[in-house]
Amino acid sequence: MDRQEIKTFEEFWTFYVGEHSKRGTRVAHAVGTVAAVGCLFFFIARREWRYIPLALIPGYGAAWIGHFFIEKNRPATFNYPLWSFIADYKMIGLMAAGKMQAELRDTANPDRNASC
Image 1 (cartoon, rainbow, N blue to C red):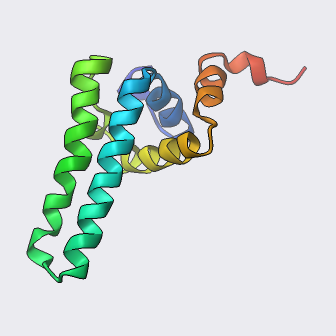
Image 2 (image 1 turned 90 degrees about the vertical axis):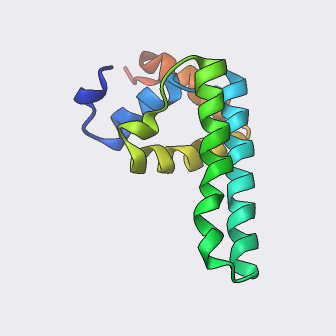
């Protein structure tokens, strides 16, 4: 799907799942996100407001490493920052619930879920 054609989050999600087909990429996202949230809470707890932007480094750094070196694609963040952020948390939630593999299968084979 061409990135210019994406108009809804549902369309974006299908694209996003395809861009995260390798487990290593998804794990990198999860590790980076947990580290970023941890940094955010740490800076808030210590009232180190000026350091809060640094929490973005482990989050984006780990995700981008996953994309560039494991998945070998370009992160969707560059074109769709908000949807990418939302999709990251949706993916991590599905991973935590043990449902991401099913989502990969279902997204790759949309006709599988179609009702007759």
